[in-house]
Length: 322
Image (tube, rainbow, N blue to C red; front, top):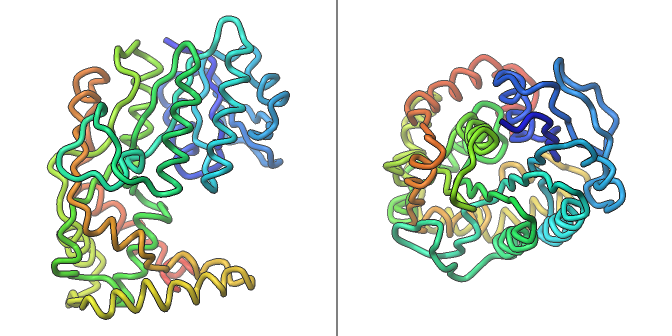
């Protein structure tokens, strides 16, 4: 089993869950890689490192058996960071194992059932950057790509808090034909568990899809979550209203964010989100189940926990407000 693990981006949502899973799983004092000064959680060692500094990365990898790359950011930064990390890893002997937190975005606008060998469709800037990051890290002797679907869980800004705000405001609900795409949800605990499985085993594959089986439609997900949040009756959102949100409100909120109203962007319904709601793609995660022995948090259980956490924090400023 890999013992000394550095988690780059460990101060983020997924990185934080990975660190907690490492501590609970018996890994001795994993390293939280971040460029900001902060207190490390119990059982975790702080490693001050700029993920965009090649020399700093090389130094941080001294004595490390594996590095889990959870760094998030803009597309160009993600691609550059992966190239720098690959260079730093290849400068070490022996080379540490690299576990890259990738995304279903690497498949672009592909539809149907998609396994890890599928060629991509048309890629977004983010998807192209994630795919290029995979190519960079594949230059390392040992690297595994975890292509996660929509990562949800308590305190997930992207797929829990944002969706909850929009449901409570009546801006999301039953989307009709616009919400018939498939929702490839994966609980954050399952993502963290997959990282541990990779570290403990020697998987034959180099990439694994991560999404719970039997993906519901986006309409099913939104309606089920709304009922758990008591955001009922669930509204039917018309195509005209969705278009107004994506093409009128979203640009305005982007301007407000640039002017300093940072949280305004969290409640944006963007054109890319509308495209995802329509995309009929199902991630095939059988390789993860077979090679990593991956198991999944049931959707009803995961959504219930999210709703309970939201109800428990409903009085916290900004949690469910725009």
